[in-house]
Length: 441
Image 1: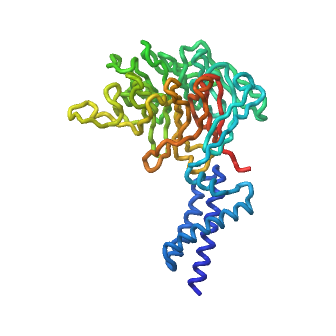
Image 2: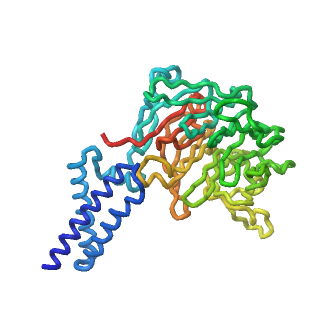
Image 3: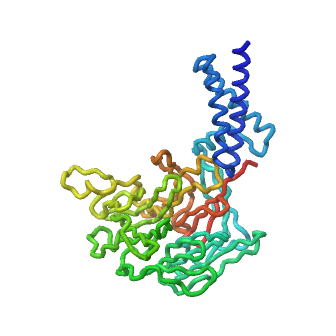
């Protein structure tokens, strides 16, 4: 009798635990701490089962109660409908089916090329829309605390801004800064916008007015002219690209990440980075990440890289290929920091972001999203890939969003928005795309 009651209780607890887990997975905005409830419930019921039956029967019970939990959720919570395929997607982030998704375009923006349907593809359940458009390609963007989007348009030497109206119908972009020298990287501070130009970085108050010079006299002798910015607790991190494809730099600032601390002092953070496409900070483990375009000659060049940044780390450019291995005992590459991940040559990594602030299911909120701009010469098309982070390790890149041809549209920067959606810029069409998690119908 005691055994039967215990097994019945375990069966009930396990079914309840599964139902709770499915509900949480379909409601990504809830706190991660709530996952302790179904985890403990299922764990306790497994332990209770194992006291009275063997492992095979416990596993069978686990599968049966998962199905019952699915039926319960579908019956009592139809808005959170669960299927076998959606369970796999929710808990692993992997979907074997790639869906074609049409980008929703407001009538205000339906001029070429958006006068025709834009079809992208993804294995992820996404709701895609054109958030706003600017008069030229967007290099980088950021959101201020009041949810205003600021975008750098390097081709126009300008920075625009856009604040969505409360009714989502009357928001208009406006010119914020002009007559700038190749504005690229942006960072939104609490009360000022940080803007990088070719040879300087300035801070501009959001209320308007002249900017304050943070750092000047940056290298301006050709080569990589853009900078990427990342705010840190102890200052501003920014990239300075190389002057050439593979050479010994005369300027020690070239091919480095520099840290400008709160006292205005400049110091090398990392070196040996030819061309940084994106920077991202992961609060979960206090790690910094950089995507890097490597050498391109002799064609097709060496592997592009994803690097976990270390203070005073040397990532090998121009002598080393990022693998961190060499057969020569006296090679300088023995002291170089290995890349965290080697990417396809000419993948051309650009924007990079950490997903922890997304309003997505839990499995998607411990990853990196990276833009790969590709290379039409080598038939490498643009895409956004997701890289799972787990216990300090990185998983293999998996598809997140694709479908651009690289000629009429090409993604560049990527950031999470204040609403928990993914925002992505288009450096050809001046578009900002929004990719939100699609709730079940």
